[in-house]
Structures are given as structure tokens and as C-alpha cells.
Length: 214
Length: 214
DNA sequence: ACATGTGAAATCGTTCACAGCC
DNA sequence: GGCTGTGAACGATTTCACATGT
Image (cartoon, rainbow over all chains, first blue to last red):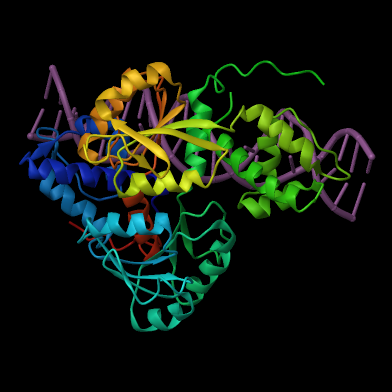
């Protein structure tokens, strides 16, 4: 009943509020949250409607209570269990990125086809052969899979993981995945975001009026 | 005159069409493009309206011509010049990722504060001290900057780069940047996308009806 | 028959505006 | 007085539906 956009913003608000909390700020107004998150006061208040938590006109929102409400709504997001498929440059970088972000994220295993990588510890995470993913997941629950294989392999790899019970993916490969509708995919297409940035850096987006008449 | 969403999809279509081209498929229908890109036929046709290129009902779209139209509309996106700020794990991974993607992307320099990194070649790209970015950009044009520094430093670093003439960013740090309105920022928040994936992996999003009555 | 191009309708998301409260 | 909560207006995006072309 809540939009993807709202979910995203709630996570952003939470991250801000956690910072506020460490600075022992106890109260905050919607317009302050808006400024810090690049949103608007209306938007913030509208997003909070989903939480069932209501502030008060005198002191705005109580940081601690608000955080509790958000976390209750978002569900337990500490100790998210991740498996990562594809231990190339990007995969390795993400492994070590998350190792510094514990305890929020917990990468429990990685998978690769390259024999020189398997059965080793990479950034503190054990690497197994891709063929064993199903057995592994039968014995170990994981919430999501990160796909960091080359584009050409992403689809098969995703199907395998899906088959092994994964219901949600973060896909770094620059291809759309065709998976059952109930399965969720977050796309992280690095190439695409650079292309978009390049497009909007020029004056392309403003007055594109010079249609060459055919 | 064209929405962000449409721009994004046009890039995706282009990448598909390039694959079609290598497979010497010469014609394609909107519904085929839709299937491959996770869109709908209407959406595809609507997006193409921006191009001024029109297909024909008999054979759909001619792949080569369509690609030309898209590329003309998108502007030259070969040899996009990038500088990367922050040569940590993630920064290094992106450097080597792009080194394999030439000639579309051309990372011309990286910057870091760590003395052990500067004046070395990292993934084939020279690394300079952060303090020299303005001089560097005075002598070398760059289209966009990638920010791969820790969250706490992202804002200052972005301001410096902005001051040095960068008009478009890809920001990997998990903070919103406050920059002049004309400056474009693409956010690539890896942590956030994993959080969203985790949220949508549960049954959180379906029937969130159990409001605890206060 | 089947695909395109495009007004018109529907849907989704954001912002406005104001009553109510502290 | 300045803030919250929210119905209503607005704007953006997607989908529908169908006239048109081959």
C-alpha cells in the first residue's frame, strides 16, 4: 500500500535520523528533514502518514520515536543476509564495502565459476562454485542475492538463484532480468547512470528544438 | 522537453539494439523491444515520439536507422570523459570496470587525499592529489565526476569539483548533495538499493494491514 | 490481420492550502 | 505564530483505444 518512492525516502530519512540521534538532537521538524534529504516538507509529512506515527505541532517529531516507527514499518533491516554471485572486480569491491558496514549487512557467501577463486576467503567471505548454490541455500537462508557477473551470464545466474529460493535481487549487470513477477529486482546499472549523467551535463536537455526536417 | 525516465529507457533500448545489430537482425517491432527491456509496446512507441523517427506498420523499425536516431538525439556518448574522486575499494573497482568499457568511457584522472596513492597509475589511470583538481580541470576538459569518497567527505569534494567546473556527477556516497540547481547529480547508493531489495524480499509490501490501534 | 502514431483517459506521485493544535 | 495532518488540486507518466497505413 506504499509506493516504491516512499520506501526509498523512508530509508533516507532513517539514515539522517540516525545521524541526528548520535548528535543527541531529540526533536526535528519536517522542513529540516526535507532540507537534509533533498525533499519537501509536504513530502516528508505525506511519507510519514504511512507510518501511523504522528508528531506534534509544538516540537515536530521526536527523533527516537520516529526512528522506532520507521524501523517497525521497514521491518528488521539489521543483519540482512546476502549472497554475492560473481567475484570479479566489482564483486570484490562490494564484498569489502559491506564488510565495513556490518552489522547492517551480512554477506554470508560468494559464488563464482573460476576454479582459482573457489574455496578461498575473499574479503572475509567464503567463495563456492556456482554449481553448489542450490545446496548452499538449502542449508543457509539468504534474503537477497547480488549479481555481479558479466551481462551475458546474468540471466542464467539469476534463474539459478531464483530456483534456489532467492526472492529479491540487486542486479549490477546491464541487462533486464526476466524472472517470475513475484521476484523483486533492484537495478544498479553503473554504465547507465554514467550515460545519464553525461546526457544531462550537456545542454542536451534544454530546448532540443533543431529538428532536422526529413 | 523529454523526461528523465524516457532518457533512461532510450539508453536501454540503444543497448539492446546494438546487440540486435551484431546479430544482424535488421528489423524489430515495438513489442519485441518492450519484452527485452521490461517495458510495454505503448511505452516504447511513446518514447520514440521524441526521436522524430517513425517506423512503418509493415516491418516495424529498421534497427540501423533507429540506432542512428537515438544516437543523434542522445548526443555523442562515445568518449565520455570522467574524473573519479576517491580511490578506495569502490573507486578502484569502477576504474577497472571502465577500463574494459573503452571507448565509451574514458577516465582521464583520479584524485585522492592519500599520499601513498598520488602520482601513481591505478588501473591505468593517473592519480593526483585532491588539491590539484582545479588546476587539472583548467587544462583538461571532463564531462562528469564520479564521487567515491566516504559519506562524510562527499559534500566538500563535490563543491570543490563543482567550483572547478564540473556540471554533472555520479555520486556513490550515501548522502544527498547540496549543489547549485543547474548541476546534475545521479545517485548510486548501493546501501540503499540493498535495503530496498531486502524490504521487498519479505512480504512487507503486501497487505500491510495490521495497524496496531493506538 | 497486425503494427504504428497519437489524442484521450487513467493512474501515480507531488504540491497546495488550510483547519486544528500547541 | 509556526507546525502538523490531510483533502483537494495539480503535474507527470503510463496505458488505453482506435484511426491509419501497408
